[in-house]
Image (cartoon, rainbow, N blue to C red; front, side, top):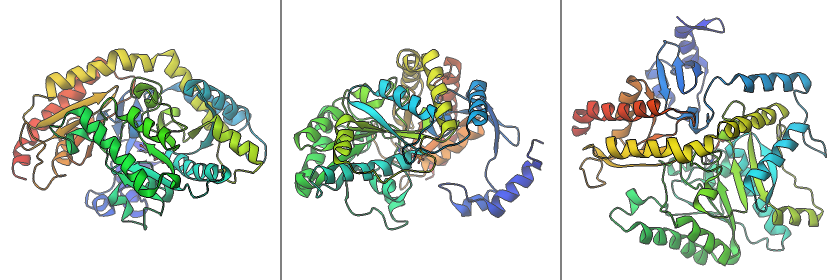
Length: 460
Ligand code: PMP
């Protein structure tokens, strides 16, 4: 039996139930199942649990371990930085070398006017920074009434009060009195779910028009920013039709509204470009980054900010009264820098665009799309989803909806593949180092899980 920090796995699971409240979890289920599945180690694209089961990690941890597990150089860089300078803050006109270098490096990758970076610890915190920065900007511009954010239903922007309010998850809003005032949610560009059978371009026009309609309803002079994920991840890998983002950009420019791209999942190569906005061809004013920035080896996030916003803050002479103790943590920033080195050295962005992304798309199209339970199998770069339907050729769901995917997911896990269920879809987002053989395994395991689940799903 694997022993970790002097506890065997059975004891760890007992302690988990007795003392640990895991994130985004049902504590009833945790108890029913006898504690969490304890992951003890990982290499490349494979994670191993305390009972010795190995699983292909189809989720890159939580959409984040882009360079894969077991990178010794990231551990070495962390060790060296800890010995040199484990911590110093960036408050009150101090800084340390790694975050300065990382900011410059990110400015180069973001390009254009996105030449400044604010650091935080998580994607949620980055979006809280966005919330305050945007409102501060408009107040300094003499338009303090511009406070409203427009977002989409089923968007995910984090779990803090402001970021969950920006998000469009109703099941999150019911806990804790969210959304807070000043956030408006409009329809998402979910073609399979909300535009089934509709021409994708007329659907894109309809989804973008919903934004403009809401801007006009709220009054354009009151709207501060639009925020969106280039591809919605946690909402079920919603890939918008190709022209959606250019339409959204045009609307934002028409009314002088800031455009915020939440690249927490899409950034750092996931879509086969450094950033999702580069793939879709639009220019945001603010960019939220996290996850792939450090490949999850340490917590760090970054908020990229346009020159215009920074110049407004500078011209005002005001202090931006916002920041976290660990904003620009030197160890996290040093690891992020080396992580970017790895992504560049191994050309993981180009490889995703030209090799593994198309390979995944072809495997989904050939081996999963024809399956009788599959309504749609879509992907972009190395992120994808498989929609499970009750009747081929429709988007009709099993039972009352939302029950099929968890069953299929459990069959995947039992067959050695870690994927997630979002409503009636299986979603995937593997490490960018995944091989063709591992992509075959991922797709074939989902197919076997669908076959195995068929009778169960029919009875829903
Ligand atoms: N934005 C997006 C698009 C995300 O996917 C996530 C996390 N899944 C977040 C923000 C929040 O990031 P974190 O969990 O690091 O706070």
